Structures are given as C-alpha cells and as structure tokens.
Length: 113
Length: 112
Image (cartoon, each protein chain N blue to C red):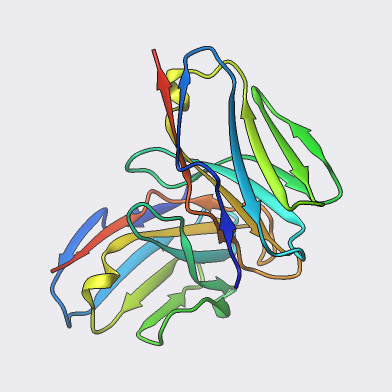
C-alpha cells in the first residue's frame, strides 16, 4: 500500500504567475482534500474532491481550482499568484468523502516572490 | 466564527515526564475530533481520534480526553520521548460534512 505523495516538494514563483500542484492519493482512497498551511498556522481547508467532483470548498477565491482524475489523483491550480499564497500545500486522502481518517502527504512548499 | 484554538503555543517537557496538550473548540455540532502530529518538513500524522459519544480514548502512550460541556479536548502523552518533539494540532469535524477545522497548533519541546 503506497502512501499519499505530492509533487513538487518545493516551488518558487513570482506574483501573477500560475502554479499546478499534484497529489497521488493512498491506494484505494477516492477522496482528496487540499489544505493551505501558512507558517506557524494550522492547515486551512481549500476544497475536497470525491470521485472526480468538487465536494465542498472552504473560504478561498475562485483562482484556487482543482481537478481529480479517474485514478483519484488530484491537482491544485492557483492563478494570479499573490505573495500571501506562500505556504505549505497539503493534500490528504480518505476512503470516502465523509471518511474520518485522512492521510496527509508531505506537502509542497510554495514561495511567491 | 468557526475556530479551534489551543491554550499554549509552546510546551517544554522533560524527557520521561507526561505531556498534556490542550485544545478548545467552538463548534458544538462537531462530533469527531483528531489529534495530529506534524514534524518539521512533513505532513500531519494521525495520532488518535475520538467521537463525541466518548469521553476518553487510549492509544499507545497517548490518551485523548473530550469534555463536551466546556468544549475542550486534550492529548496526554505518557513518558514523553525526544521523538515526540513536534507541533500538535487538534482538528474537529461534523460527521455530516467533509470539512476538518484545525487549530493553530502547539509546539512540544522535549528536554533531555
């Protein structure tokens, strides 16, 4: 059984650019949630994908968007990057959308200059 | 608004002593709670969970206590070890929803 993986591990972008982050869910899991974790803060829920559909969204603007693929891997896209988007982006997979236990990946550290 | 907060941002504990990390939650509709451990450069790691129909749950060296009356959650770590040094987060959820709400975290430092 493989765990949750994310790529890339680190990324540096400039303001106004666009970025795509990737996540492979744990084997057998059909639900992926994305979180933003600013330095010194707890993770903040961005959105969740369940069986290729967005299943819920937190308080993030539309320039944060996502996709989930038939193999349940997922992408997080952020357009028009702002300095405040600098954070650790975490994805977590679970067996079902309302599943209790989430397994987190190691995260992608995004720096916006 | 929704919030899950922690009383102590940093906790220093002597190796071998017991640690207690506290958390207050504000959403009385939350019925599921998790403690996560996050080491530097890693994603949060599940430690232990508890449902709202329980007051206490024990794992290996860890115990979670839930007091629904005052909306308080605590994580007790027995015989704290250097490997326990990390940031600990509590998170709450309503079982009818998809969203976890995390607190800001407590850094646990284990002193040799």
